[in-house]
Amino acid sequence: MADIQVGIIMGSQSDWATMKEAADILDDLGVVYEKRIVSAHRTPDRLWDYGRSAVSRGLQVIIAGAGGAAHLPGMMASKTRVPVIGVPVQTRALSGVDSLYSIVQMPRGFPVATMAIGAAGAANAGLMAAAILALRDDALAQRLQAWRDALSASIPQEPQDD
Ligand code: RP5
Image 1: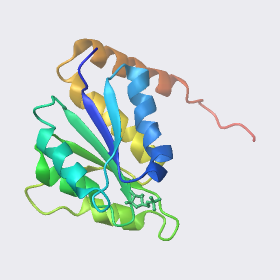
Image 2: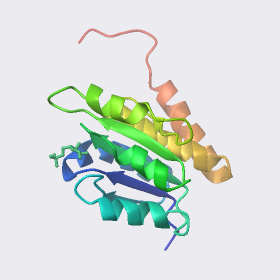
Image 3: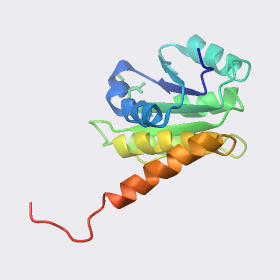
Image 4: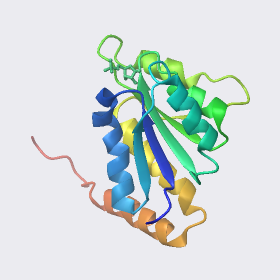
């Protein structure tokens, strides 16, 4: 079995509908990943173990999604030097602005590459992870370029009536 390149982690089962957007992109591009529920608040020991072992397990990028008091991406970034891409999950109460603010404003020294709120952010996290891996993987770089070209080609010149 191929080595796992990307870890997709999320604070709750309820985040999966959003984070699946990242997984779908990685599936499309042939990137090997794992998906785990790792909550900063409900399973802090799991978070610690995941971060402590990320380098030795060969993970190259971690995509971390959480909503509300979204401390998972930042805490993971504090625990491992593996690059962390943060996805603010959209919340009902505050529309995900709470998630965004919880993730984006990291203190100097421990960055999280923060994406947009919600599904688009999760999809872009998958693309960003692939772009990082593609720096050292020519075949993946070609697949990513083809994916981008296909998206561009799918955009019509003129808007249509609904
Ligand atoms: C966060 O709390 C999770 O990331 C999730 O977005 C949010 C709500 O979790 P549930 O109450 O739906 O499990 O930790």
